[in-house]
Image (cartoon, rainbow, N blue to C red):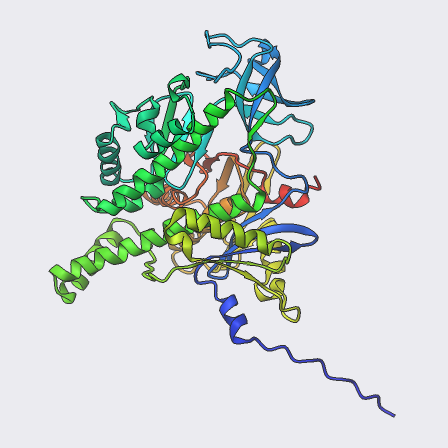
Amino acid sequence: MSRKIALKESVTVTADEAAFMNTEKAKLIFTVYQGRQCALTIRQDRLIDAYFFSKAPSNMGAIYIGKIKSIAKNLDACFVEIAAGEICFLSLKNMSSPYLLNRSLDGRILEGDELLVQVVRDAQKGKRASVTTEISLSNDYFALILGSEKVGFSSKLNKEKKNNIKKLLTKNAIIENGSLTQNCETLLSLPEYNRLRAEGMALDNLRLPPIGMIVRTRAGESSNSLSMEASSKRNVLQQFYDLSLQFIRLLYIAMSRSCFTCLKKAPLDFEAVVQKFIMENGMLEMEEIHSMEEVQSTEEVHSMEEVQSNKKAEAMKAQAESKWYTKENTTDKDFSYEIITDQETLYPQLKEYCDSYGAAAKEVHSRVKVRLYQDKMFPLSVLYSIDKKLGMALDSRVWLKSGGYLVIEPTEALTVIDVNSGKYEAGKNPEDAYRKINQEAAREIALQLRLRNLSGIIIVDFINMESVQDNKELLAYLRTLVKSDRVSTTIVDITALGLVEITRKKINKPLREQFMSRE
């Protein structure tokens, strides 16, 4: 007698689930993978960023009043206590103007000195946490830093945008002779200055250390045209005054606080991830909108046929100059940021943070959407193939669409990336085949550097090409690709053996170390 087997319940994708699955625009996902809390950014069905959270909360970014316990002259460093029994490493190299609170600075650093320090690296693998005296605060548009009066600009800002911002800040006496003006009256807006004095703050007694500034890439969104609009000028100035107010309050409060006081707590792990996600995709949105506006502006002067003709001519010229460069244009103005989590305890924290962040920015940030995903029949890990995507990101082999593949092997001293032709058939013209594989490999390498958070020295063994010109174009193409990386990345050169040298600044642990760490 045959036994009747019950049919499994069919799982269908609903309209809401289909909307969730659409990743044409980047989505930030907070979930759990193999017992580890993680944050993943997915765009166009590709995993482009991943971060695993440590069990112990990070203290990076926290600002303390520390005390120098001892000085190690052989290391050109000293050890600073920031809390009872918590000793940190402080390098004395390039230290210009530490903010001392127990005495006036006379060029010396002595045991027992009390000074402002900021945590720049958490303790790990038996090493102490590291701190710096170059205290910094930042928002979307600016960063203020102790130690120098110089004003710097993001390398991603073009000359026109730099000049527009420089003229605005100079007109308002914020910048003078290429340096930040060093007095509270100028660093604060007039209403804020008067309000602080009314509150009883003796700003005249505040000893300002040298303060420098960096104008960030996002400040350029308001200066895309030759003449900035009044609303854009107000926005840029307000961003500066809001940040300088935080900075001056911090310095003033420090004068009346005791040693080991934490003046500014480190941001929660998820806050840093959300802020980075919003800022990066905000810049992408503005670039797309400005690109569209430029096209529309051109259409007002020329007919559509002329525009198309010009575009065709420009495309042919670019193709003639190099066979490497490709450009994808996106012109969707209805951009919105979507953050999704299946963690019920995390959802209200995300919602509260994004609401407050959007209210403070008063710009595109207000379009952040935070959703709680609760479909147990079709979990997030299945919806976005998270197991597969993370498995590939942690694997040493990366397949290319052409049939070639990369082998990524990190070692103690450096990371080695080998490019192989794999299943790709060269045909009658091997040089063309090698050029195409190297081009595809370069795009994938730029993505993998960011995704895996590779840093330090990176050596890439591309498929050998006989043409010197092809090698030069490969280097130029790779340099173009890494420009969008938020972490400073340098394509150095090709060695005599045909190996491409890359250096990338270390900001955090590589993805594999984050995943394997049980701290």
